[in-house]
Image 1 (cartoon, rainbow, N blue to C red):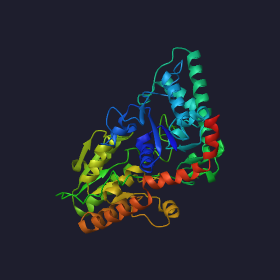
Image 2: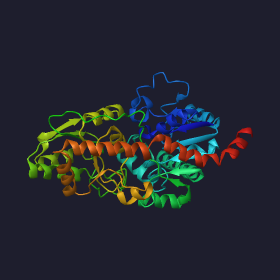
Image 3: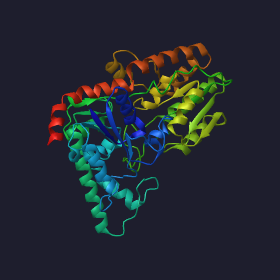
Image 4: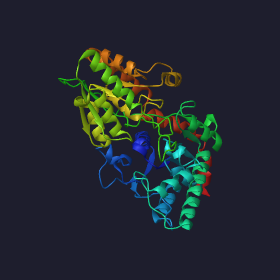
Length: 422
């Protein structure tokens, strides 16, 4: 089967593409962004530049920007994907689905549903453009009302196409029902039944070998989640934090680290990345908790650099809010590291059928208790790390995710063949 890919948030779709190739399928992967987090070479050392024949660089192809006329790369991308028997579509890839006309697996990762499939996003988009929001990635000022209205109409049509593509998906990967209320509501509004939905989070055990704990003199902890934890009164993704997925509970981590230091007097080597909306607020909270001197700050990293941080760490933190553990958490577990996070056991245990070896925490007190268990006892860190590796490898491999999608696509294969012959 020839399988095409468009959209590559955090290289999550690319992991499935690699798994499908290992399973013997013919894969065509389109790279549409220039940022390292969306490009294979940002995660994989064995992906050379220039790319091998099965990877085609059509970047920068910004479907969310109302360019007139549409760039030639858009027509090229659609033509390439129409040559496939089935497609995997991420980010704004679903908006191309009506034109591609092939059975599709829709891989939703957040903004592609909660922004670009929500008609309410049109007004938020126009407000952000008008205000010139500093971090808005495609910001520009409009010279007159007519241009603004044209932009609004473009965004409305893009959202309509995105919704149609999501609705047409043979299978739709999103967080498990009940995990993200707003996303669930939008999927119901679009008309995606629960029977079409799957929950795919994964790691790549073949890429990430198990690493024994390092011999750090001071126990080293690394936080992989963005430093985003304050709910803005703005109530929109373009001016604040509205999605449960955006809220990482970073303040819970800092307060828990502070409580551990005050209780035990043990200093840690804390590694934080300047990424997220509340970096300055986090720095102030660290000072208030009396642990700022224990922190080493790093600039935003590539995925390969994050993997190296896992190998150097003794303990990893992921999100402590109401979101969900993600690929970052599973990569750390595959490395063999204990991960302190809100692993949402009430949902994950139901899906997997057994408890996850995540060091469960939702409050500063629970963070402190997990640190008291792990920091003084290397053997406990090693035991938890071994369980973490086994869990990630057994239940969340990219091959397992690929097989789940293929089972759904196989039922659509006869229709795909008829479409190609037509």
